[in-house]
Length: 245
Length: 281
Image (cartoon, rainbow over all chains, first blue to last red; front, side, top):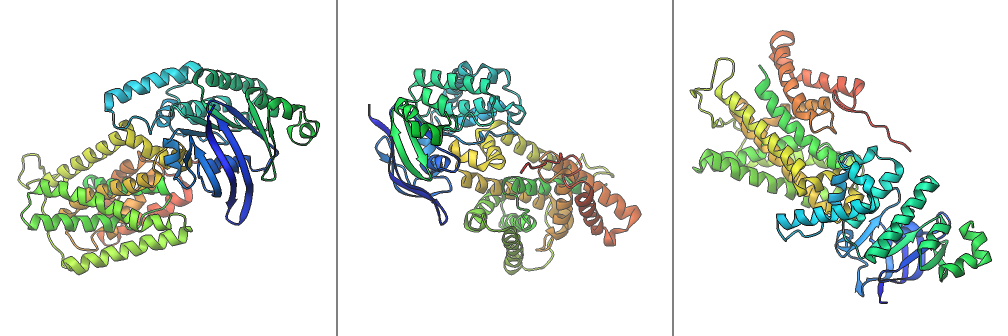
């Protein structure tokens, strides 16, 4: 496997407040990395740093060997990085289908209208396969969906990009356990069928470690442990301090 | 009867709503932009360009002027406090007004209508220009709505207005969308200006009063509601006319607009058709 995403000595700050200190992290092509840690450890900031959103970063961030730090967010997205932000970030006043079409906004701009609509139809079918409920709700305003459906819509919209790398920020946030389990099952299916690399930020360590093939723990902006999910889940100190297992 | 002038207020009100929805700023210079582009049309006409050719060229110039002002001026203060952006838009208002006076002088000039006064569709209630301008405005509004509803770019612009951060995350160039929005708003203003000028005459201050009526219409329709603005524009036009004729007289009928603004802000801040949204914190 070759590295898809590499972070070398990445520090990040909001104004004068430094939130991340020299983080090294790698996501392999098609691999799933779980990033764990307490509230305020800097997990969300790390994802925002990768997309260059509102944070100042130093260090190197590479996607498939190409430097992407200092690229504007839209350009990073165009390279195939789909970010499902904390709080889902759906376009609440637009319909489910419009949200999904926006997910494919950057794709196939030059290839003419016919191929574009064919491509859209094919990809809508693909994400509806993972999330049948979204097909039922296609004409509904996104803001009227339940929390779980909105999370599904956010993930589906990210898939419309046909990303190489999916950044997931707390997909379990605020959802009932049964819904969370369902979403993780779908994520597993997506990973199996599409081989997309994923960087998954989670408070729900149990489910995240089940899905991941690599895990890292962030504490107060520093990476304190990194290794196989089993090793981290088995480490007594880690379990008590960060994972709540 | 106010219907025709109402269409001008509605068009300009929609321009205000477009910019408010995407940036949360009221662009006080919207009227002066319309006035300035009307002078562009006037110059073209004087140079011998046929009416509809100059109409089209003026819309193109308005688009460039609007988008250019966003890129060169507005973008630089988009994260500044509200007071700064208000002052910038007042500054633009004064600058455009002064520039127009400097280039074209403050003389009041007649401006032609493309609809001949003796055309068959003119009646004693509705002059041919009033009917024509209402139709031109309605056609423009229909085009703008179709653009937002049915095109990929229109969808991207709506997305930008709703959630700029998520728009970046799907790869939309948000700054470009905002510049496009300014361009479109200026085009709407240019249509309003060219349709208003045959009635109000062309001079640098022609849009001052019209902007106040448009602002009243935008607020009455709901400053976040693109459907409300044109409807409220017609309503304001009719109320203005009735009040001018039967209530306060033409001398102080601008007061009607100010009364509408105050009443709406006190009793229905989201507009007559607006839904009030409550933010959860």
